[in-house]
Structure formats: structure tokens, C-alpha cells
Length: 116
Image (cartoon, rainbow, N blue to C red; front, side, top):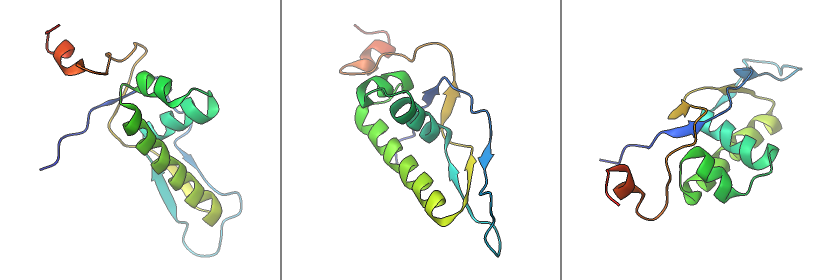
């Protein structure tokens, strides 16, 4: 059984829940779902210009995890834009907060459990 995902920390509530193409293609409208943590990763790295280490600290995840979230989000957005699909922003394992996430890094589990 896989390990449960840790909650990602998000500081920005998206102002809209979906984007639709201006000119709809014939047939049913297709779309992709961009998770909230993917939108936050795109915002921090691409829109705010943070490096991946700083963005990972903001979200409370490791840098490799942020890299995977970012790659998946970029793939979804690119697929939707090139095919004229809608983008829905919803779901994911995220928590909205104004406070900084708990520290991560070597030994972060010990610190969270009261050790060190």
C-alpha cells in the first residue's frame, strides 16, 4: 500500500475555478483538471520567479516533490492550451494558510514529533 500524501501548503486562493477556450471546437468540450498544488507551484516558480528550493519551502514539500508537481502541472496546461481544452482548477491534497509551513529537511520528522 502506498504511503499517504502529505498535505501541501497553499497561500493563494485562485480567483477563478476554470478557464475555457474563447472559440469552442465542434463537438463536446474536453478539459483537464489542474490540482490546487499544481497551480501554486506554477504561481511560485513561473509567476513569482522563486527558485524551486524556496518554492518547496513555501509549500512544505521537498524540492524533488515540487519538481514532480511542477512537471505535471506544466504538462496539463500545455496539453490543454495546444488542444483547445478547458482547464478546471480543483482538488489535490492542499491546505490554505497564511502561516509558514513547518520546517522540512534532514530530521524534520524528529522535530515534528517533539524530538531535537
